[in-house]
View 1 (tube, rainbow, N blue to C red):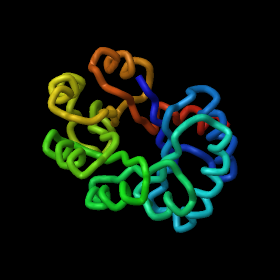
View 2: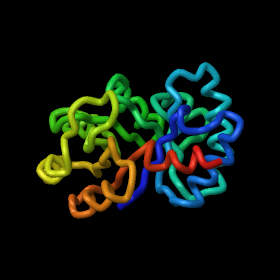
View 3: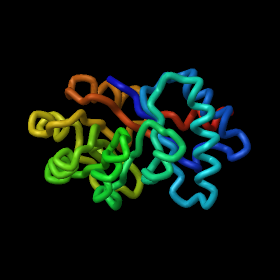
View 4: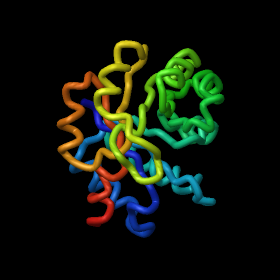
Length: 186
């Protein structure tokens, strides 16, 4: 199962961003990493630092919601939230790898039809402020009907959740909190 690290500003100290990110890379070797920092007015300089650092690692670099900036700075792709799903086609036309957020089978079908390369289904497990968890059984049920590689997202905080996902047929798991310990430890 592939690993998708999503950053969040509450999980790393600003002054130690590079060190914290390098520690997470070294420990987990994620296949994808997304710079997610929704409210940062200085997102562009942070994205430049993130992409510069990420060149040392063999992983796909993803910016959150900023597909034009991702293209301009040379990121591999963009993770579009539900609010930005209408931009999937434009991001694909720009040559970007596109990950799209979904919360239902209908949303998944729409995102795939628009050209998303990966979709996230969430929340799989209980997670703060994200509504009711859909559970692993829903992932297993939906998997045959979704025609894209699917990423489990939400509430994956440790090995227990990874174990529960192992036989679901899921392509990858994405998490903020699973990787948080690395950001807080530095």
